[in-house]
Length: 222
Image (cartoon, helix red, strand yellow):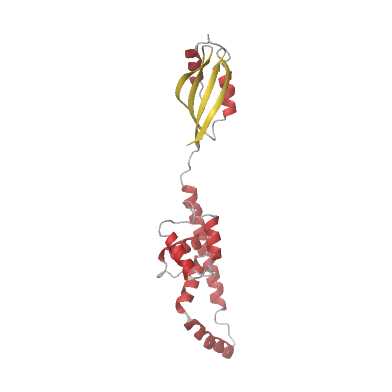
């Protein structure tokens, strides 16, 4: 027996899913929420599936379809009454030869568009005011001297004297590489949008009195 996205089983699964989370994935509405939303042929009953109904109504609002959802929900609650009332309404319309609902439909469409525009505007405002997360990385850098006679204290002092917006130097240590030569291994926290590692390497290697080369040996996002 196949399960459709309008079946009680599907609604039960969705209700259980949204009992512990707000969206299908992540912390804000995404394409995955839209995909599941569009697959549903109708909205879940609020009394039977409260968590799924809450999610459905929220995504409908984000998509500007809240009015459509309310109409669907009202239709499901009215049930057969709507079908029974349709015939007398049609007969009355034929008798009077008057479109009783024409102007109301136009007004409803305009109101729905207004509500949709307001909700889209509110959503965009909330998204715009959401604090932007600054992307940072921690880098481990090897700075190699020319030989074993290089003044490593002066080398490190030169490296730490390099300043850039978004650059913070961290811990360092000397690591033996052989034949009495030691390299400086130093960490740096960089803001990804502000610090170019290529530019940083050029600045470090400008200290050619002490420095032979610089390599980034490890990098991790914070």
